[in-house]
Image (cartoon, rainbow, N blue to C red; front, side, top):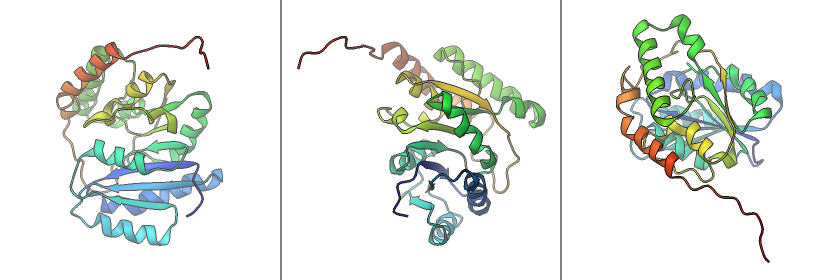
Amino acid sequence: MTQIPEISIVVPCHNEQGNLRPLTDAIRAAIAPLHRSYEVVLVNDGSSDGSWELLKQLGATDPHIRGLNLAAQSGQSAAMWAGLRAARGQILMTLDADMQNPPAEIPRFLEAMRGADCVCGSRVEARAQGDSWLRLVSSRVANWVRNKVSGETISDAGCCFRAFKRECVADVKFFKGGHRFLPTLIKMEGFKVVEIPIRHDPRHAGEAHYGVWNRLFKSFTDLLAVRWMKKRIIHYKVSETIN
């Protein structure tokens, strides 16, 4: 595909072979009626289940699909950042490969971007109707702690279904675990971030790659770092210039 796409959809994946074909089919079905140019950048993060071989097959039959194969498993943040750096679109989107972020919601994100620089999905309403009490409570506790420490108001920081303008991440300093704090990092660059409620579907295939509680405890040191960054970031405006 020689045309520079308007929209780039970045999807990190680790051992998601069973989800990749239905995922790309669902993305195609969601965007085709919009008549907007797009690409899907799938980043294989050290999978051992044949995901990369399938990605090569999918890329050979659909010019919208691009693939990156990381030399070793590097984590979700690294895979997402690699995909964002390789993406060519002016509008960037991220979502998980497990089909729990339904691609059918993509048009709603694009519509919401008419009034914002970054649109984040929130699964709070959907999870209240379907998740187990343990997962529901742990998610609420994790988000409450993150917001309390960081001074944020994001209702679902763990949701990676997002859409944002390319310039939102042009100067962002990404780090391991940074995907959880991307809305805050974008806000720190001076951009407008909003949330929209989205569906949260059952996993189509494969297994989750994280535990219930590690959303909070594994990222706590990152949370403290983000809090420090928010307090120390430099803000200034130039009022006049000469020459």
